[in-house]
Length: 243
Image (cartoon, rainbow, N blue to C red):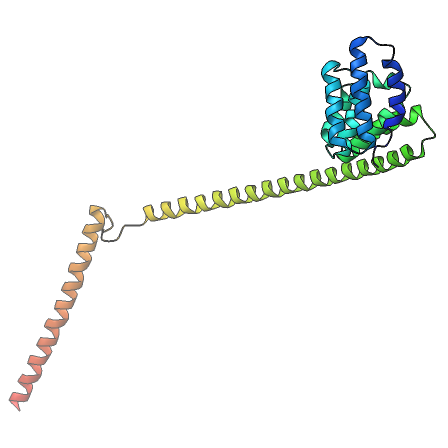
């Protein structure tokens, strides 16, 4: 899909220039010199010639259009499109408007600007409906645009899914943290309720008195048992002695 429609518009533009003033005559010479270099595939020299013409007349349709074609052949597609944009209000009204839009669409294809390519080829076909190459390029640009839009939609869906997964993970992490904090607070409360190591639990005076009385009663009971055992042992020895 190389732009090869420079000659058609050159004929129209050069006829327009022949009726212009003296300054335009100089511009005409630069454009013609650029055309000769272009036909010889001396694109660098052609670019210089067309730029000289634009210094004298920045709105020259011939110079801008042919410079765009030259930049395209040099592989500078972005600059080619910018150059063609300068005459977008003038070139479409010329007899070679179909070529203008065809080349604009071709440059847009190289930039993968499929939306602009579809629009440009559509305009070219409106002006020249029987252009088979324009139809083929339109179909190709339309298909690529659909693929691009579908890929973008898939990327958006994937991004939305990733965002949802990240949000779910964040929510789960927050829930786990809340549960952990609650468990830590519960453990802290349980520890506060239990007596710390080395500290005796506090008791009331009544409870202490009851404990003391129980200890004294236990000691008295134990002493009574000891005394009883001593008395029985003494009695047994006395019986043996009497014998």
